[in-house]
Image (cartoon, rainbow, N blue to C red):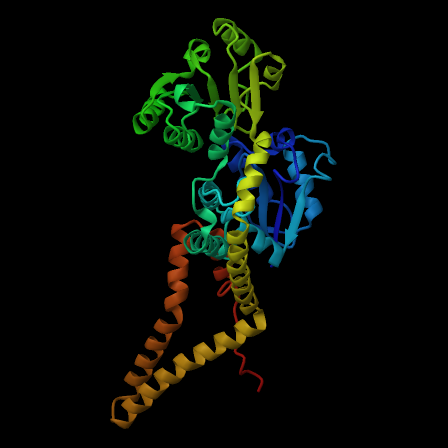
Length: 423
C-alpha cells in the first residue's frame, strides 16, 4: 500500500527540460491510462503545471519503473531525468503532496494557483477511474490541509505569485508603469492576475490577445482592457512597451522575426517581454535583438527569493500543520491493517447479532410465535449486515469505480464454508 511521488520541478530542472516533460491537456487521459497499466500501480494522479510534473501512485511500484515510463512517454533518453528528478515514498510522499497543494513548494512561496491545479489533476484522474479509496482520501485531506494553511498562517497573505513577480520585474525596469502600454497574450488565470496587478500599479492601457476572441472579451471586461484575436499580433506588438505571455500553446506564438519588425516600427524604443508559459510562448532567440529584453519564469528567481524570505516564518507554521496531518493520514493507513480490520469487522457483526438476539429473546419471553420471531431476527440481521455494502456497491456503480466493485464481488464470488463445521 505504498504511496509514491516522482517528479521534476523548478528546483531540479530548467525550463527547457520541464517543457519537454509537461503533459498537455490532450495527452493527460492517455498518460493516466498508461501509468495505471504499469505493473504494481493501483491508483495514479498526474500533476503537470509550468513549474512541475509529478506522478502520484499507490501500489508496490519501483521509482525506476515510474522514471522509465515518464522518459519513455515523452520520447526522452533513459538518463535525461537522472540528475533532475526526485522520488518520495510513504510519509515523505504524503508530506510533499500537502506541501505542494499548500503552495510551500512553489516558485513563489504561498502562491494560490497550485491548489486549483492539483484539484484539476485529481478530477482528471477521477474521470479516468484511476483514483481509488486511498488516493481519494489522501487528496481530499490534502485539500483540507491547504485550506487550513491558507486560513491559519500568513503564507497566503499579500499578492504573491508568478504574475506578481512579473509585474514587479516590469516595475523595476520601467520607472513609471502608468505611462506603459501592456500586451497580454492569453486570457487564462495567470494573465488575468497579471492584469489585476498592473491595474494596482496604475497601468491604464492593457490589451488582451487570445486565440478565442470571446474569452479575451470576457477577461477584458473584467479588468478594463481591450480585446483582440491572436491573428492581430503583428499589429499589436509594435504598440506594446511590455508583453506578458501565458498560454497553453505547445509551440511558440511570438518569433524573433515578429519582434524585429515590431522594433523597427517602434523606432527601436525598448520592449520588455516576459514569458510565463511552459512550453515557452516566445522564441528564446528574441534575446539576440537589441532593445528587446526577454525574461522567462526562471529569470524571476531573484524577486521570488525575496518573497520567500518574507514568508519563511509562515511556511514554518504551515509545516507544523502539514506534519500533524501527515501523521493523521498515516494513522488511518495503519488502521487498514488486515488483522485489525478483521478484529473490528468481527466485533461489529457480533454487536449487531447480539442486538437482534436480545430483541428476539425478549419477543419469545412475551410468548410470540418462535417461527415468526426467527424470521424477523434473520431479516433484521441481514438488513443491517448488507446496508453499508449495498450503499458501497451503488456508489461504486454510479462512479464506475471498478476497483471497489471487484473487491466487493469477492465477498460472494466463491462459496464460503461454515467456520463452525468440524468443531
